[in-house]
Image (cartoon, rainbow, N blue to C red; front, side, top):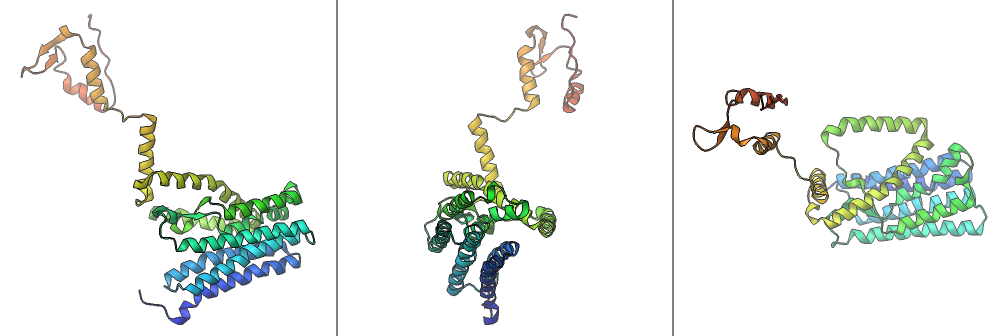
Length: 327
C-alpha cells in the first residue's frame, strides 16, 4: 500500500487532539454545573479515541508521535478529567476526596504506561491480541461516572453517597491496573448474514441514545461489567487449548462442544435401523427362523413377503403392530 500524503497523515492526530479537547471541556462543563454535558464530552472523547487508531491503520498513517499523543490524550480525557468531575461533584474542597481523585488519575496513567510496554512484547501468545490487560482507558473513564449518571437520571440515592462513590472510584481504579482480561472489540468480526441485524441494532441504539442518553449510557456500563466473567472464562479456556489459538471462532465453538461431550461421557446415538435390527435379533424366537436362500443368514418365516412394506413404514418413522406369535 502506498504511503499517504502528509495532509492525510495528520488526520488521525487531529482526531486525537479533538478527543483531548473534548475531555478537557468536561472539566469546564463541571465547573459551570452542567454535569450532563460533562458526561457527554467524555463520551465523545471515547468515541473519537476509538476512531483515531483505526483511521491511522486504514490510511497507513501510523507513527511514533501519534502513539505517544494518543496515550497523553487518554491520560487527560479518561484519567484527569473524570477524576476532577467526581471531585467537584462530591468532594469540592475535601482532602479525602482529593486523595481518591489522585488515586484514580495515577492508576489510569499506570494502566496506559503498561499498555505501551505490552505493544513491544513479542512473547505473548497469539490469542493475547483478542484481550486487553485490565479495563481499557475509555471504559474506565466512563465507568467511574456511573454514580453521577444514576444521580442525574434518578436523583439522590445510596449510589450518590460519599462512601459509595469513594469505594466505586477505588474499585474502578483497581480494575484499571489489574491483570483481568477484557475483550477487545478490535478483533471482533461480524459474519455477512448478521450485517442487517447489526445495522438495525445500531439504529435502535442511536434512537435510545438520542431519547434516553443517560439511561443508555448506564445500561452500556452495566453490560460491560457483566461481560468481565465471560472474558476471564474465555481467556482461561484459550490458555488451556493451544490447538484453538489459530482457528476461527466457529471452529473454536466446535472444539468446545466436542470436548464438553467427551467430558460428560456422551456418545452419538446409533442409527435407529441398526438398533432395531439388533433388538429384534435378540428377542426373536429361534424356532421361527428358516435358512436364507444363500445359506448364510436366517430369514423369519411368514415375514419375508412383507419385508419391503415394513421397511417403507420404518423409513417414515412408523411402526407396525406385531401380531401375537401364539396365534
